[in-house]
Amino acid sequence: MYFGKSKKNSLSGRVPPNQNVTTSFPVLHHGNVPYYKDLSKWALRLFGLVEQEQFLTYDDLLAMPLKSSKNDIHCVTGWSKLDNHWEGVSTNDIVHRAALKPEVRFVILHAEEGWSTNLPLEDFIRDTSMLAYAHNGQALSPEHGYPLRAVFPHLYFWKSAKWLKGIEFTREDKPGFWEKNGYHNYGDPWKEQRLTWD
Ligand SMILES: Nc1nc2c(c(=O)[nH]1)N[C@H]1C(S)=C(S)[C@@H](COP(=O)(O)O)O[C@H]1N2
Ligand SMILES: [Mo]
Image (cartoon, rainbow, N blue to C red; front, side):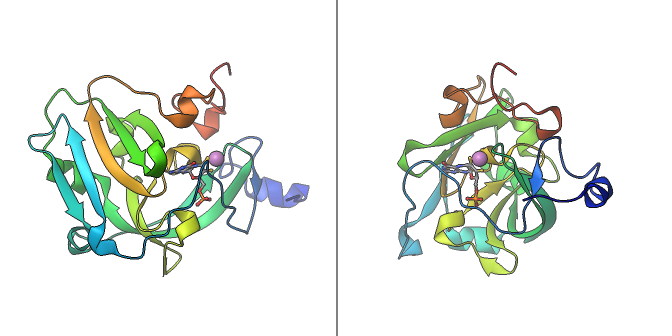
C-alpha cells in the first residue's frame, strides 16, 4: 500500500524501515491451515528443561489471568499492521506455570505440521510478548492461528507462531523453520534483520 510523504512522516518512529502500513490483515504461512472442531482434544505442551512436563488445556488457559495488549506487527515481507488488540495470556505466567530449570536460555515454539520458531527466553517473557486467543474482539480465525498463537510485536511477525501446540525450554538455541531456511535468527524489524546475510 502506498502512502504520501506527510502520512509517512507522521508515522515515523512507529513503522520500521522499508515497511508499508496495511489496513487489511494478510494471511501468511507455510503449509496447511488446521481446522479444529473439538478443543477438548487440544492441549498446549510445556516441555524441555522444566520441573515437570505438563499439558495446558484450553480451559486452563481461559482460567489464567487475561492479558490484553495493543500493538503493531511487522511482517518481513514488508507489511505492517498498526493497532492490533490481542487477548490471551502472559508469557510470564506461562513460564511460572512451567517452573523452568535455571539453565534455560531459549524458547522453541512448536506448531502444527512440525513448524517451529526460536527466540531467547528474555524476548519470550517481555512485557509486550503474549500468547493470544483473540484478535480485535473476536476469537482467532483458523487462518490467523486458532486456537492459540504467539505474539511478539518487537520481532518480525514470522516469530509469532500460529497454531501453537508446544513450548520447549532449552539451554541451546534451535533454529526453527524459517531460521533454517535463510531468515535471520533473531529478526529485529528496527534493524531490518530479515535474512541471515544481512
Ligand atoms: N505455525 C506457523 N506460524 C506462523 C507461520 C507459519 O508458517 N506457520 N508463518 C509466520 C509468518 S511468516 C507470518 S508473517 C505470520 C502471519 O500471521 P497472519 O497470517 O496472522 O498475518 O505468522 C507466522 N506464524
Ligand atoms: Mo512473514
